[in-house]
Image (cartoon, rainbow, N blue to C red; front, top):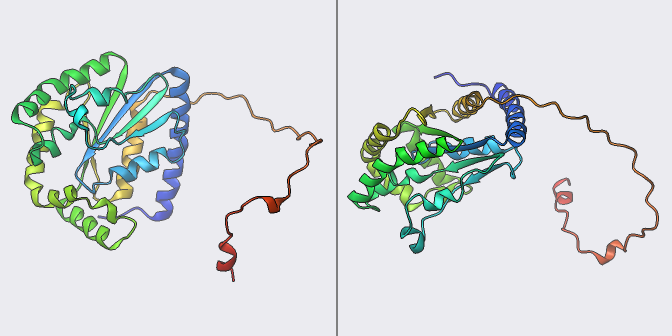
Length: 264
């Protein structure tokens, strides 16, 4: 497969990020509510795409939710309860880096839930999502699809990259052995939850840069935003500063400027 050049990728990403900022301003102004779910296999590229979406956006408007394993108290709650607390209010975009679909994926494959809990999830999830949509939340669901071979290459790279080794959790290592089990779980999940009100959109993520551009472009196409006219900002001349004497700099503790040594 031919890959986009770095120059073209950076140019298109910059254009899309400008559109994301326009989208953000429209969402804030209109009070629109958006919840986006990112699911897929380990190392499928979800995190990288989320990072590029949020890079230029206001974190008060566009927030990422990545919940850790549930506490004992949370395990005793209604399954969807801890996710409901993070749903968007007016003028917010919430990006779920994994979501309530943990039950249909890792919990099902790894045996962290009972058969009855799994069946109840499959029954109730479509109704839960229809309820969200009826309430006015725009729910968008992405599945990042990566091939067995490409996932293995990414796992191997994580072994040698100190900045990415933390991504190889015991759960990730175990998932390598259960490719078919995860495939079956995903197929079952789609058969129950790929509903008209909130369909699954599959992102081919074997090439990360392509996946990012395709996903962001598609995301923008789903929301009926328009560019808002903003009053021009004028930076007037700063008034003269009088009546202030700065304390001696020697009284302050500065961070060592190590870059000076690197310039030698």
